Length: 237
Image (cartoon, rainbow, N blue to C red; front, side, top):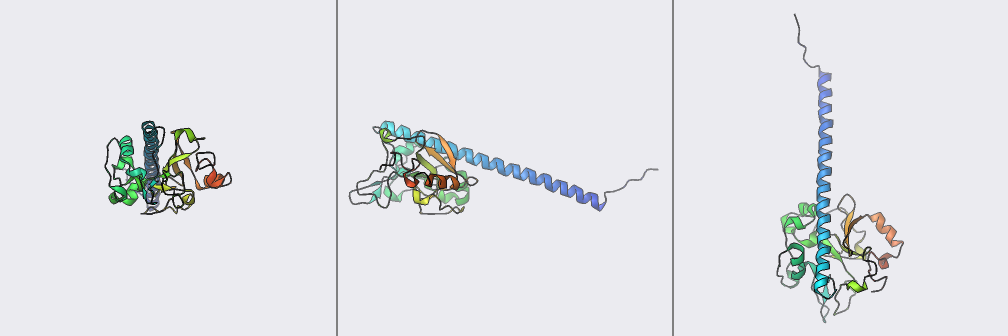
């Protein structure tokens, strides 16, 4: 006569621990896959932004889209993410804007997925995901400024940043190390190191790379704001 024995408490605990461990592996794998997918989408968007910038230059006598302009009274306008001609090249849809008050709302597929998920639908704007590195310092630039490069004046296009992951439309040297890891509505020229401690960068030659705060420290030791990453004219404005 055979007897059937049930699981002991110890055996049940061992099985439970194994299930928990396996579940944690699945969770970590899913999280990493999602992170890689979000990063790939943002890399593709940045590549397309610079491609649109190159096409814009070919339509405008070799001048890339302006990060911003200032009229003769010193008032800012002509911001890149509200330039309807540039948006047409980036997303394939011409979106008319109304001065500085009109922010360009686009499909989530054109945005940084991490920023979009953190900020929700009311922040479906390009400036919540990507910023453009300005040629001039915004606060000290003169009236009549058009903050853009001509193709012929770029000395190191493979080293000069055009668009980066950011929290605002404008990115400047002063915002290179201000990131605290928190998404939010920020009116600051700050880079966002939101992809596992890295910021994604599109360069004027069209390639996309990544950079950390430690990398920024290295750039500070090699010219700071005059490094070709920030200034594409070999240290000359």
